[in-house]
Length: 114
Length: 316
Image (cartoon, rainbow over all chains, first blue to last red; front, top):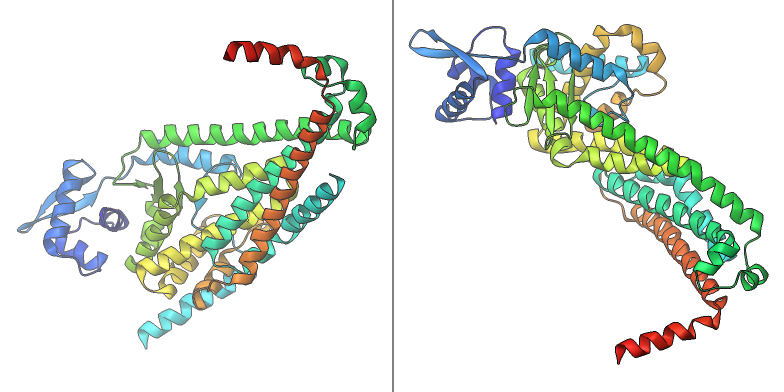
């Protein structure tokens, strides 16, 4: 729950109001639940907020870019994933798989339009 | 003893060669558990049999025989294993131990590095968001489990697919997948023939997390789409890597195909097959150990009657 709110905020370029967060997370959340989570994240200093009309709009405070990202990159590039005790979401694609995936996305997007 | 070794060897070989293929016919969770437990058992049996056979030669050294209560002469005449085989087994134990410790050290080092890295980073629950344009998402078991996702990856996915990604990574963390894989890999370090099974476990674990995500999100196709989009976005950012690694990995296609198909069903036969092969291997290793024990007992020198008296006195 917290994860999804944070991920939604981090994915957005602009600050989001609780209503926008709720709409994006979907999942039929109560407005108050979203508010509670946002307040908790704000208390922990994980999101910043700014006045937006009558409500607050929230923005994710991501890990400061350069240093952390660079260190992470170095660790990831350093070695083979098997010894590195982590599981990546996706690995490298073969050309054949690539065609399959492009097809899948195109098909489902076609469905959305239709 | 020779028969036990032969049967055990056949079962272990069959497990090494067929384990991955049999595992493919099982749902990913069952396959992972059975492959990993099987790997650990077979690796343990390998080490036990090597050590036991080696010990039959080692025990014949006069100094060792004197420490134990057996006669090196009797041993030499009754030894069921030719001395050169036993010595060979003893020599094989050296690389086995070295490889195991090297693999273990590599993992301890990696855990320490990731622990240091994650310790400093702000996290929401288990989630760490890293501000990086390059798409990246993974789970690491350090610090009770962390999910690390870059903003690049989060921005590439629509909301429902983002949920699928988080559910997939949360499954890795909560099920302790990394520890299962570590066990499978360490077993493969002891017995390199188990490598194929360990690699298979790396794939079944991803499938396991995919299935968990599909259950959580309630839509298999959303998970398939999130995988597809994540993989394609990742591909765009580092196309130069593709040709080198394409042959080695590239399991995303298989995972997507599995998600677009019906959920996997449990099948009894492959599960029993894996269980039987593992059981036979362990049973035979136990038999070998037992044989060696009686063999040493039979060669024991009845000179310890004195010890017996002392014990008898003490108990009085």
